[in-house]
Length: 570
Ligand code: DON
Image 1 (cartoon, rainbow, N blue to C red):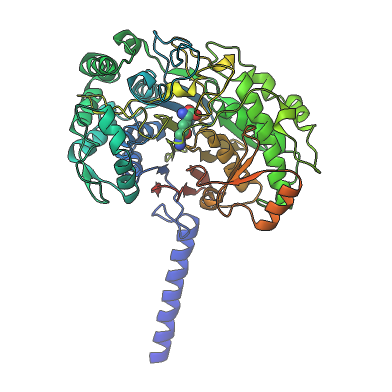
Image 2 (tube, rainbow, N blue to C red; image 1 turned 90 degrees about the vertical axis):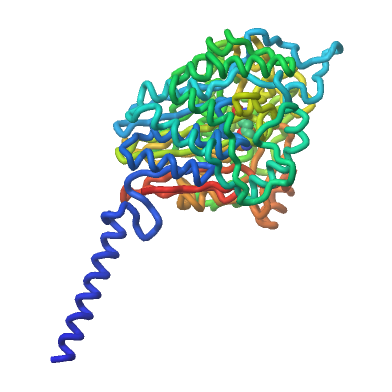
């Protein structure tokens, strides 16, 4: 009798555990399964604070765009390297029903900008002039972008979305060890460029766990919360921006601020092995380049060759060489320059570009296209990916350009100005001292947008959302997004593995393959070298934050361990 009771309870426990496991795996109540995947939505961003704010918005019934607005403002507080209200960015949107759209909130040159504004009398670029100080800033686009996105797609009230960022700025947040290092590293520059002081400066060195309070930024966010875009582009904040310009020979005027508009643009669409790619058109080069890259390698059996094998790397590098050569010559702000967008992503055109590829020997960048040199960009931007309960998806990459932008915090308004003007070809046709080069397409002109590499993207298959992806990393943005997609589609990697995987990069000129530590094994490196490839080790490439929808309908997060990034689902 005793035995039977024991046996029965053992069966009961077993049955209970099995049912729980089953529910956990294929759709339990909690929204989370045993693999750490979530059913109701997810936010992946550069900061745990920001990801949490985004998920709270989703839990309250906000959609992906609502969460994106809250995350963008939160990042301006908790990730001042790149999160911003003084910069700009791009949003790619796909609704659960498959409607797609993109929003361009890229900065613009001021009305008084001129082609030669960073050159000396001899016509040479002046050191640092397009990089630091008030003159390096383009007219910010982020606040207009968020207001525009919210107006078109938002569900919750605007003030609810800005309030969490305002509270974080007023009450402060704990900085990470990485942030302490970076802020301390910026001290000399911040001191030099902010004579009236800023919350980002501290007498002693910053330490992990220090609380960063930004009261002036909180006041600005309060105005934005109460007045929408006008709270930034007009009134007291606009006055502070213009006063800041006067302090450092900047040229942004009240009229420039008032005139700034974010623009809805038709997405660049492409396909790769049955997946639909939805991504950003010019003034980003990223979307066109991404579709070109994927089309260039589609004919080759990468999965058979294997992840980061010599053949895989060779084909991907040769595609990158050709695509970046096109980027330097053909891409710029479409409102100012006739970008041959359709031509560049035509199957026949892309195929013809790869026809000169030779297995035996590396192509040389001189033979692919002579003369111009592809840009090397500064690497501080941020990307976030969001999916809501209904399956609407948002992919946003946003930036100040360099880390902490122009290094100028607008006095009285508490936010950093971008140094996006350096993304223009400061002197068209010849490299400036930072390696940034381009042609006529990306020359400076009043009110023009500077060319970008940012590549926010969304993938779908058979009408269903598949992936939300993007990254910072300057010119490596395009190749990192490309490799992340290939890692999942061709090599069957999970989202987190695809993000973690070591990356490599070729950008036409300089004619070399940059590799992260451990990206390629020594035999692969030897094989590539024997064919004439120059392999150059470097530090981290990319900081991808992405979401993958599994065939069971769960969301896998990929938060890049190269930063303090965090995926939070529910
Ligand atoms: O728009 C661009 O391409 C650059 N301003 C991006 C800079 C960047 O990614 C820096 N990031 N890590």
